[in-house]
Amino acid sequence: MDRKLLDILVCPVCKSPLLYRKEHQELVCKADRLAYPIQDGIPVMLESEARRLSLEEIDELNKGLAETAGA
Ligand SMILES: [Zn+2]
Image 1 (cartoon, rainbow, N blue to C red):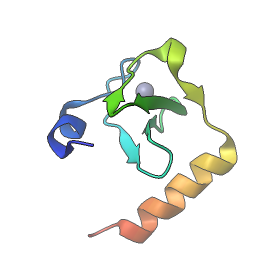
Image 2 (cartoon, helix red, strand yellow):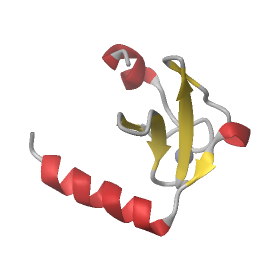
Image 3 (cartoon, rainbow, N blue to C red):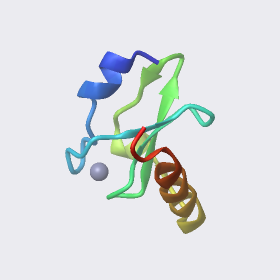
Image 4 (spheres, protein in one colour):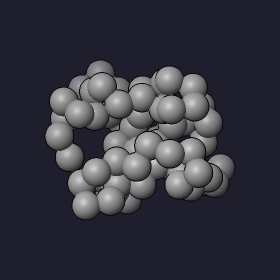
């Protein structure tokens, strides 16, 4: 996905920056625990299309962030 595009995309619900999960092809809003799908390289920024993340997934994200912090 285009890094520049990712930089300007925000959550349509709370306007927070999103996390790109490459392996899942999703854009994640941690605040809302929503994952927006990326279809054919195009992010679908609709709350109605977003997937609700489980607590386990949020945990995983937090761990991942800790590992890359300061990079
Ligand atoms: Zn949000």
